[in-house]
Every structure is written in structure tokens, then in C-alpha cells.
Length: 326
Image 1 (cartoon, rainbow, N blue to C red):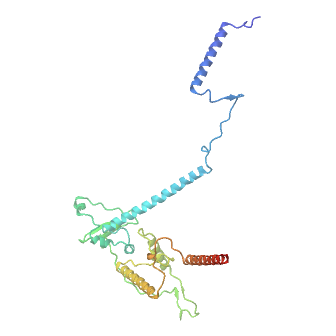
Image 2: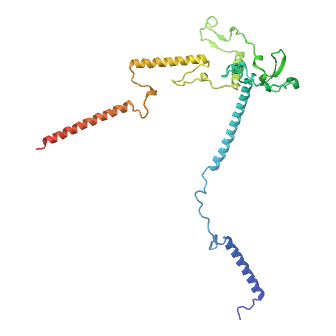
């Protein structure tokens, strides 16, 4: 029986077409480079190569990134609050430069380091007359009293007319509060004094009244609300070092204090020169490395020891020459 018995021509054509199809697929895969990158051994795909060092991520990267995002949000809030405070201060300064009230009381205005009245008299802060607007051409609208911190007040201008405006927009000369005369200190029954009121002889005690406590608390809250509070070294209760000197805020007093300091320094220099002090002035020291007294003493000791050894060596050489026969 022949081997090809039972195979028809149709089966042979199907096999040939299937072979042609596989050859085309293999050729396309070879041209695209896919056929040589994935060798198969024993029907099992090889494992991928070990990842490189640069592909690895450090431990805690995700936690640090999340923490950085939180810190960035907090810092952004701080920046926004600082910007809002600076904008509020700038508006107050602009109003003060224009001669307006600015929304601060007399105590806060007196504590400012800038003399806005002097700047206004010098003509540095007022706007030009070109910016003035004819009030008769505009219809005035009554302001709405919706701001508790900057209420609406009524004042009298330089022509005797009654005006209504915000307290921060009223010129300071029209909003001067009457000075209250100092009253004599009244008797306070809460203070126990020595004598007839305190026969037991105890130490005097002080118990402030509720009204006084409320006044102290109100003054404290008023000082905390001051938007123009700057650093004042006189209120800083700590040791600032031997070289610290608190100058006065007044220009004449400050100039006099500086002259007294210079005179005291000149007197000290003269007394040191008269006493023959050998410590030179710091400004007159030569540039370069300056040896201390201990270093100079050590250097002198080494020099004396070197001279002593040299003298002994010379003496030994002389004795050797004298001992040699001629």
C-alpha cells in the first residue's frame, strides 16, 4: 500500500496555502524585529532582566512628596495672610499721607515713627489740585453703616458745614478728641493700707475692682489690634549685651547722646595712653595672623632652647679639636 493513499488534491492545496500564510507572518515579524527578541526555551518564556539601579525608587519618596504638598499649602496660606496684612497697612499709610484719619486712634497715631504732619506741611504727600473733582457735579449718596471697625461719623469741615464720612476718611484735624484732664486718684476701698485701716499689721494687699479690670483688658485688646505696631527695643525685656545702647526717638536727644558717647570714648583713650596700656586699638592692628601671648611665649622658649643646644654643640666641637693630637 502506498503512503500517499487517502490524501486528496484538495487537502494538499489547503496545506500549501496554510504554509504560505505562516511564511508571510514569519517574514513580517522578522522585518518588524519582533521575531528575534523573545527566544523561547523549553516552551517557557525567560524572565525579564534585573531592573537597573536608576529604575529603583528611594524609600519614602511618596510620603515626602505628600508632606511637601502639605507644607506648600501651609506656606501659601502664610504668604496670603502676610500679603493681606501688608495691603491693609499700605492703605492706612496712604490715607495718613493724604492727611486723613486712617482708622487709628490718637494713641496709635502718637506711637508712629513717621511724622505725617511734618510730611504734609512739607508738601510731599498731598495730591495735586488736578485730581480734585467738583462735588457739585456728582450726586452724593449716603454711606451705609455696615462696617463696625470703621463706623460712619459726623464732623464739621473748615467752612462750618456738617459732613458725614467714614472715620478713616475724616481729616485728623477735624477729629481731634478733647483732652481729658487728669483726675485725682480717688479712694479705693479695695486697697488695704497700713495704719488704722489695717490694725493687724499685715502687708498691704491690692484687689482691683471689676471696672478697673475691664479697663485694663480693654486697653490690652486695643493695643493688640494696632495694625502699625513695629518692633520697639525698649519693650523687649531681655539682656541685649554689653554693646547695646538704647537711643532716644527724638532727634535732638539722640544727637546729644551720641556726642556723650564719643566724649566718653575719647576720655577712655586718653586715660589708657596716660597709663601706658600696651593693648593696641583694634582698628590699628596689622593685617594677617596675630599671635596670642601664649604663642609668643612658646616661640621665645623654643628660640632660647635652640640657642642653648647650639652653644653645647659648639663647645663639644672645641673639646674634640683640643683632644686630637697634632
